[in-house]
Image 1 (cartoon, rainbow, N blue to C red):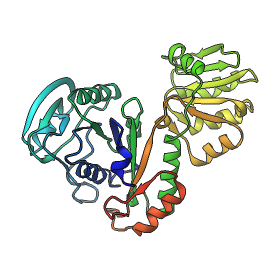
Image 2: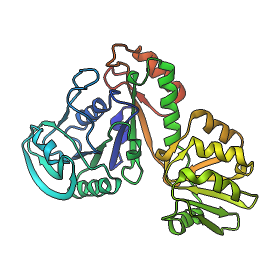
Image 3: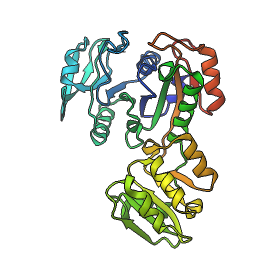
Image 4: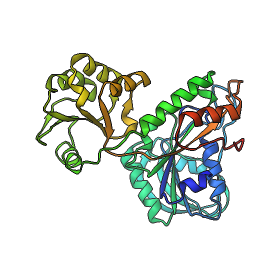
Amino acid sequence: MNILNLIRGYESLSIIGMNKNVGKTTTLNKILEDTRGKYTLGLTSIGRDGEELDRVTATEKPRIYVEKNTIIATAKECLFNSDITREILKTTNIHTPMGEIVICRALSDGYVDLGGPSVNSYMADIKNELLDFGCDLVIVDGALSRKTFASPTITKATILSTGAALSRSMRKVVEETSHTVNLLSLPHETNEDILKICNEEFEDKRVGIIFKDLTFKSLNIKTSLEAAKEVSSLLDENVAYVLIRGVLTDSVIEGIMKSTNFYKKITFLCEDGTKLFLSKDNLYKFTKQGGVIKVLSPIKVLCVTTNPKSPYGYEFDKQKFVDALKEELDIPVFDVIGGV
């Protein structure tokens, strides 16, 4: 099994990182290398992920190398930093601090500098534009610590990169990575009646309660952070679901668990796994005591890639690192540099 086999059949893919310097760009370059001559690729980025030289560690960051005929969506200023010969296909009227996003075709192999929009809806539009230009696969390079851009509304699948730069403790890196995969991979709600209520009746509502008889009530709460007290006061044996849009945090879950026991037989719905900011302990406690968390839109995490080296001067044993992650995860794990 390799990454190329995993991504086959998907029209769009995002690559996100657990931290800076965990090998996300290396993973992207590996995919670009493996797909050479086999795919027409579209390439873009959420925002812009830093400079050529990492300011903290003074280490040179890997650049993105594309082949001829790759279609790229990037900001004008980034285009000037790229050394490909290119044909401008379209200007998008989507503006960023680095200029308008331009879609172009590479007429030569070379290095590109990617800088895309930082708004989800714009990224969805750009992804569709790249597909319309005939791309077999669109890859979104997710920016630093912006897991929200693995959102299933944008890409069909996601790769998560992790590495020693996250912590000096291999055990801590493994635990945090495993927990992130679990959050991103939470089961999705399949009841069509419930999904219809969430998508139609609660489309622009932050919090909604759905009762067992499929009647419902929306709460006038501006943010999900204010939800704990109000939700707790409404929970009883007649409630089947609670929808919380926006982020679901430890403070909300803790507040609900302290205020009522009715949560134990209720399903809590989030938009997708990127909106969950829960500790491993709180997630375990909530679900162990009978609470259920599901998502409206599932995320397909294809694999985890590893970087055992840290720019801070230490590294893990690459085989032990991969093996430790494989013990915790039920998805493939790859060291794309070391070939493990």
